[in-house]
Length: 107
Image (cartoon, rainbow, N blue to C red; front, side, top):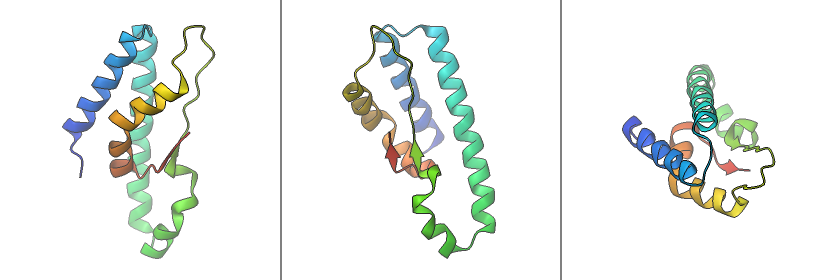
């Protein structure tokens, strides 16, 4: 089980890495706040859903879109390469998203 403090620490590290790669602070801040809000909403709705769902239904939910995270970025001339984004995701967020939200796929 990942603690909230660990999640905050990892997200903060990821945020700082993005800043070092010249992402605008205000834009990053909005992105991270929105993403966190969606994660919290997803987690609370998932907890409610899980409480009413039988274990068999829950086990068969693997193909549900909720187990995937899609990252969509607009083109930018100084973009971060996909390979680097994947590396950062795997280093900083993969365990937290899998353990806390059941995310199994990053696209």
